[in-house]
Image 1 (cartoon, rainbow, N blue to C red):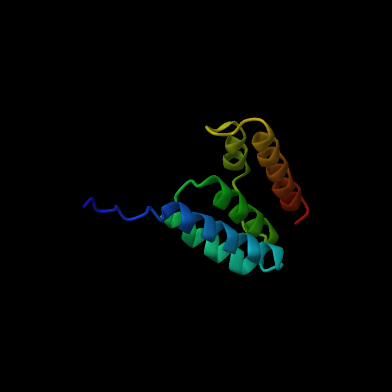
Image 2: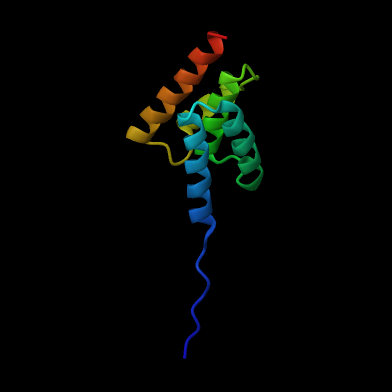
Length: 101
């Protein structure tokens, strides 16, 4: 009898983490979103969705945001078509929030 290998839960955990951070942002809790996303980025360094959301939360909290790093996501690997437009729109939203502070 063949043994089943354990399922890889990393993708599920990342999806859950992104959902939790998004939930905090949606509930207008940027401080909690920032804390959670910052911690998650220690587990998934450079993860695009978490990086974009932590930047938005930082802008809401008047924390420094590295806009050059955010703009690098616009041309990074795996960014094409509609996804590229979404990343560019999110980056510009964060930039406008930074200017408004």
